[in-house]
Figure 1 (cartoon, helix red, strand yellow):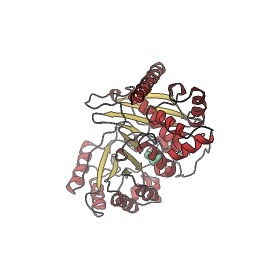
Figure 2 (spheres, rainbow, N blue to C red):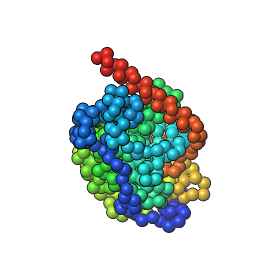
Figure 3 (cartoon, rainbow, N blue to C red):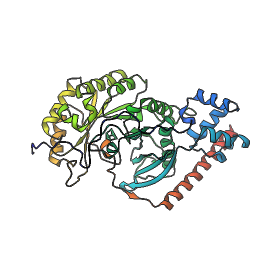
Figure 4 (tube, rainbow, N blue to C red):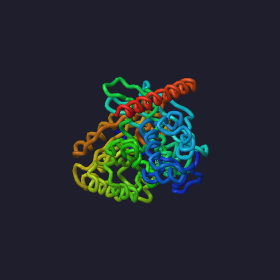
Length: 415
Ligand code: SF4
């Protein structure tokens, strides 16, 4: 294997600067999904309606996945419109959808109320359906391999804007937007990963609030198991410590990509603030506090970070902090001819994995589906769906929601 050292650099234009400050400050109006169950009851009372209407509205949102007042037949007709417009303002509009992986992956571009755009990716697997969501519009972490990072941070998303990505994608999944030849039903979203646009721990408060909504059972939230929610970070150490105290068994994924500060300072600019040692200490602390094994994501980039000595160094850094607390996921990039950000050779990949395994580090090569890795921002090879197809799918989704509401009304009457 070549011992050539390729160094990270931005391939087009100037390198953006690490930034935690929002460039755009507008925030959408208050939404039901920003509020706890109790806060919703207060908000509904302030509008002049009985508190229990908050739970009814929440069930429509989190169970039936609808914001359409016409579907809310258990609410008095005279109150539906006002309740929906005050508590359920439109937050996201679908701009574009792209299918990939023979229909098993759907990437959607959403426009926010102020024109900012974000992405989500829905991925069907034989045993689960995973949704990758964004936590910020843009990103201030400036990773040189990432298209999002080159544009800088626009603004943080609100909790409701994060939650709304989940609701809308659950609707798409219910409608059969993604398909996979499998035993399980791809129509229900089982896993959530914060690996889309943005660094979730740089928008901690809204992310944590959104996680509460996603994990709590209805009418508080969607009831997706916290064990199936993954928060991925490039290394905001104070955020990892806060997450450890959240009291939920979330999975923490650390996008490490290099075990040495020399390379990581350039590859992941936030490393200039929080060094590899400090980051791995925080990851280990997360395991100790939560009992959840930490995932280390490692994109294998040809001649940059894929040398066997780096695999050995990585194994040493992990083993020195204990056994059984961590799992490494090397991620082969897609080949990009002529780019410095290209796939390692098969031989280098194998040597890297073998070195980790020989050091007793559990290691699984991950696929590069959709935005399953941070570095996949902008890499999805997709087939665009025409707008009519999307409109037809949206109409079918509405019909499916109406059917589910009618079924649940029927069941309520039978009780
Ligand atoms: S890779 Fe992730 S953290 Fe880095 S700039 Fe891109 S979105 Fe931000």
